[in-house]
Image (cartoon, rainbow, N blue to C red):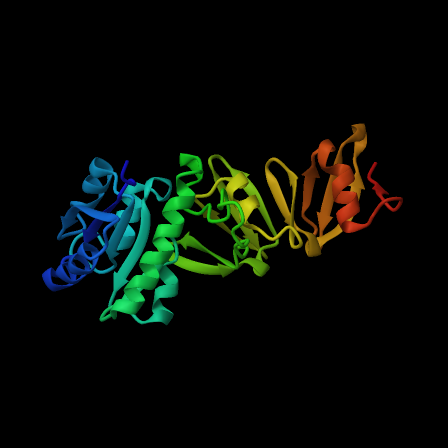
Length: 267
C-alpha cells in the first residue's frame, strides 16, 4: 500500500508566485496539490471544503489578507501554514500567530526545502494529536526515539486587530478563558486561541507550573503559598495576585517551590 500523500494548497494572488511554488511541489513525490486560490476572499471556503494538510498562504492579497484568512477559518481549524510574503524577517515576527514557517520572496530552493521539511514533521505530529490541539501542539506525540523538541520560547497574541509576539519569559501567569487562554504580563492581558492543556505541554516545566485546571503560574513569580479557610490553598504572586491551587497539586507545588513547613495561614 502506498503512503498517504500530503495534500497541499497554494493561496497567492500573484500568478508567478503561485507557479513557483507549484513547480517546486511537483518535484515532491509525497505531495499532491489539491487546489490553488488567487485571492484571500475565496481562501477560507476552499480550505474548509478541501481540508488540505498544508497551505502556502500569501500575507498580502486584495480583499482578505493572509491574517484575515486565518481569522476567518479559525486557528484550530487551520492546516499547517507556511506564510509567503515580500516582508523582511523582522516584520514577519508579527505573523507568528498561525505560521509554522515563512518564505520571503524571492526564496531559493534550499529555503523552500527547509520549510517543507518542517511542514512534513509537523503534519506527522498532527496525525497523532487531537483536533482541538492541532495548530500549536508541536511537542505532543513525537516519534519514539526522536530528540526532544525545544519548549516554546515565544507566543503570538492578537491585540487591537494586530498580531504581537510575546517572549514566554515575560508571562507572569495564564488563566483559562472559556475555550481559550489568557496570558497575563504585568498589567496587560492577551487572549490566545489555545487550550490550557496544549499550552502546558509546550511550556518549560522548570519555568511554569499548572497550579489549577484554570491557572498556570510562572514559578519565579510565586511569592507565597497560602492556606485558606476551609482547607483550600492559593499562591500569591509578586504583584499581589492570588490564584487558587488544586488540592491534588498542593504537595507537588510545595516540592517545586520548596515551601514545606513554611506555609502561611490566611484567616
